[in-house]
Image (cartoon, rainbow, N blue to C red):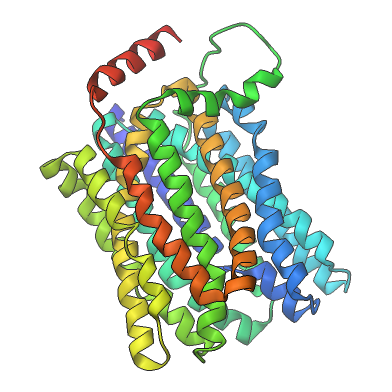
Length: 417
């Protein structure tokens, strides 16, 4: 098998593993919150604790894993994280069957899954960079992006139906099985990923190594604005998401299925955008596509503050979310490819881990802050504030003078490092 066919074979199995596990995750969307509500009769404070603290603590715990994973073969790491997630998730239906399930257990499982998620995603990025030829990176990232939006479109509605038919822990079991299938697909991919060589002979991890990912991001003149932009945009969008639930299902009187429909249908835009991204880059260049798509994705959310009751309000949400998700579908694979291209192979895991950990922590912090804001001003005003702040993030994507010279200096610094 020649090199190109071998790379296609390995990426094909990775794509299969990614698709299965992503669908399982979307199928189990908000599963812990639903289990806490329906089985443990938890209150709003406990549900909020699960939603915010679990991922935030998981992000912190994932930090030391980045440097550790960096100098190991990535496929075994991905298989290990799949098996860990499968095992901890299966503890939930087991405890449920024994009538021993608690909110504390759900919190521990949430933290473990969040840390494993970040490690898995960072290892995926490094594996893709290692096995996929550089000219095919955008195509590969576009396929992963389209898979994400397909799973997001289909998973939550099907998961909600499964909970209604078979009980609240059904989707947790399905998610666990998806990780087991993902591990099997990664095992079928065979070898091929190399074990990176350490630049120095130090056998142990030092405290300073934990910050390597952030150091590299913040020193890079191209990655730094992308980092700040993506963290702020995702944080502000996610911070207003629970408030929109409160607004639509509460005062505006939408049924839960209507709320789900309003966010499932626009995911078609993610498929469209991810398919268009490669053609747009070929025609206009990656820098221009990042600037335009990145700006557009920041301009839609303010319209959600004007949603009203009835069919007109539902259509308004669908149109806004379609525009937002289409813009994200174009932006995300180009951004992911750019980030991999600008990160040396021996820094990918640390960089992606730092990026993901910051993103999850920022979402948790901004969600809490916007919850406080909503308690003072009301959910509609809080959604409007988030939407009004988002366009300012596009300033981080503006081209800078002498950027090419700075990039050349970055490349020289990377070569010396």
